[in-house]
Image 1: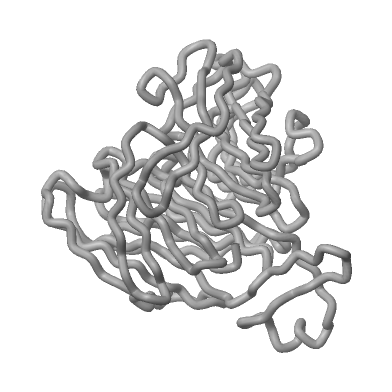
Image 2: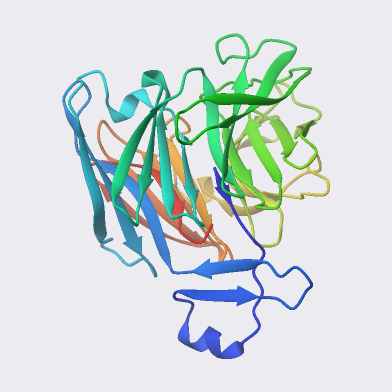
Length: 343
């Protein structure tokens, strides 16, 4: 759902005064940039299922303190009683840092909303189809679509699509298939871009890569010995760390025991056993894999999660990956679609 660029520290003085509205550059021939404005975007809803709902696009300032303060950017009501936050699977949001535009999709209503944060406007775009996990790469919006009404059978057939962010039209860019061992569906999909033309989609134990320059895809089984009974491992909450590796939440049920962990996947060898960065189970944290959202901030190496914890309550987690420490807070409203402004 996000894009990230490599972070380089050139001026030690910035480490003292922090990173606010600053630009980091390296001295290579094609220097990447990261804009560090220390903020998060998040969608908040205080409505209830089956009733008219108000959605708030908020900003959260960093460093995050508790209690968390939400600075409202825009509020929009939805009068349709069938339109609420719980008709929307997770990871249907994206952020375009270049144009300062936030996207969030309610797929069952086939509605994509584009928020222009500078202009403080919202545009409703109708997009047909059971596509998944919108992601921005170089200003373009990409998704993945799956055959069989979004629930793949074996073999799993999929297409990579681009969405016209003005009229909602879809363009098919690539089509492929792979032998299915776990599951692969639109509701469980998450995505990330490296901002250099490579996009990654994950569902179950299946990782799909798409190269926007060559318009080619690749399938990688993250658990070559996957077995539903003895080695069941699924991945979600896909992000990209500032070292170029992938981050994901791994939920496992194996002969070696159960686990819920944030893991780092070697981008050069994704099928090797990932490195555990943070152990949710050991810290007493339970996550909702159906109603959640994640983002990652490269400037301070932090991973964020929102997780529905009750009928209309949400747990918020900030995980400092360098120290494996966490901050958490619970809210009596629903939070979704979290995005770092530094992506």
